[in-house]
Length: 123
Length: 420
Image (cartoon, rainbow over all chains, first blue to last red; front, side, top):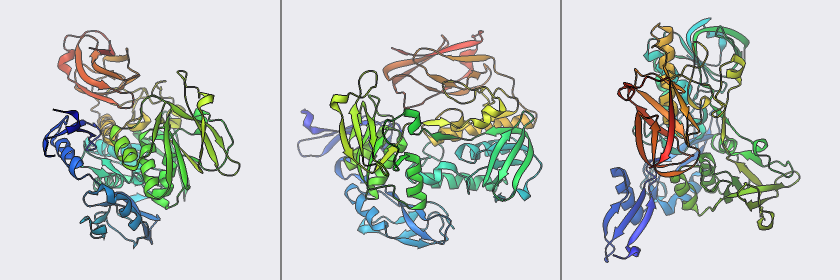
């Protein structure tokens, strides 16, 4: 077994930060994920190796509220390469108060399949 | 009631909580759980919830809610519980003084000064950020030098960008989070500089905030000088020697208009000092019993005011305990006093609580002075727990069951972290 079949990742699933090893066979198929301490870590290793994704949190403008910005998140992780684009698209979005936590402020952002939802009530 | 108006205040409360951040909200719920009747949370901001509102990133609540929440979601869930339990929350109000008879002097935005009485008090004032003065960076004093948390506030709540090109000093979690945040808002982050040989924030934040965006992290480096008249124009950065002094021959300049400081937090204990509770010179927070009671009768404390936590979940957990004990105190059910003092020994900077009882289980928080691998935590000779590694930036949490103390008859236990 050569070392170039092993990739190293640090799990971002929780503050523990498990050091993961993902091992592939000669046909680039994952044979084992090691180093995790929970199932989330194993899943993360597989996902990160094949299709890295991130949850995006940012803010959008809000009118008629006590604050200028409304915090939002994506309803599911989006491909890592799309994170910057998602934030750029949201920079100019403006919603009107009142907003409730969980409200969808934009559906299916950048064709990622993820909705953008408010993470607090704001009026 | 959630209000900034003091007219609705009662003259006397069972429990008054100073500070409505995550610590204060959890403490209020703990007091209610133990049967305290009239409970008031006082907060100086427009709304309770503390720093969580500006921490828009995810990563909160994994311990407490068993799911990953953003800061605002965590705050709102707590606030909803507090209001549901009919706990009074008075905002826009500053606790100016607490005296030994537990009279609190409140300064309210609209109605001036009011004095109220409390049967028990919980100190939950949290912490504030260290500023440039704390690390004495040489150079001019231009605009554009600010703490990472302040930048987080103006960006995330008010929608202002602090500059166009930033350097970050300190690798604490807020600094790492802000490196990503500024990048996503279109600000270029030239690098994060950490004077210690190891990063101060969580590894997951190094990965998702720096690596994901190719932001360089310079360990054993610092900002040696700030340049610029009106506004920051550049900073001089340099590697440091073993005494942590910049090595002049190896310094270089970075053009930037903003310098963010993420160089640690200080428990906010002006009120505690005025009141006269004893403080621990290492934590800069009150000395507390296993019930989170300070050295002053009926005055409890929890969260970052006691010691700086890495995770809000632990702030909530510790403050819930403080609130529960305040509740037990006012209902006349206070447990017997502690009989064992914990004394930090080998590679232990501090332990909280400072005393424990041989009758009850305890959660003990401690911080080590230096990194160590394959080590053990020892409580005298009664308990040893193996750990694969310890790290000053990561608080160690462990539970001690009373059965380990059955055959211990001393009054002090040394706590040591030693190599195996």
